[in-house]
Image 1: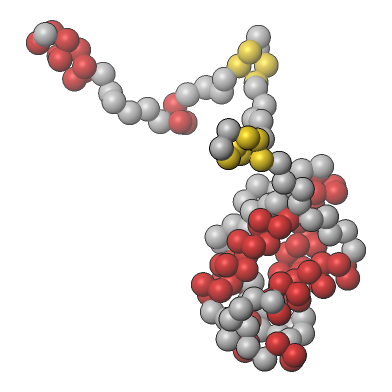
Image 2: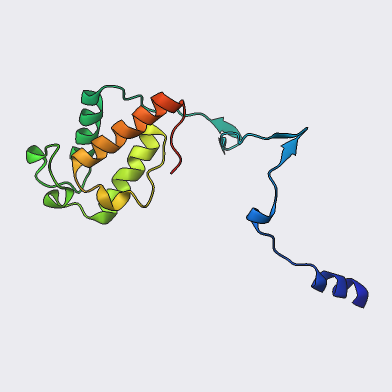
Length: 142
């Protein structure tokens, strides 16, 4: 019993991911597979919005902000409107970003959120991500 406890105390109880080599199969590195989401034992598949045209992206973001429940002065909302002018704060910006992530299927990084303070900034960000997806056949990593 004491010998077993001594053996446990000599082994580290943690490992670092950087210390491990990538998993390989027959000398080939395995590719990460997309995460599958299940609910009540059923695989959930979601068809994300496909926004290709600039007008579609602009219309989507304007409609999203206009329909957001805390937006004030909805009739004066334009692409160059700052979110703060319409009663939205940083937490509202996070909620809008989460809705965009859910609708379009990609992640907006935490470092990007502070610079998304105008509707046009959201539009430009979505355009950049869509362009990246076309050029690289994959969404960028956050």
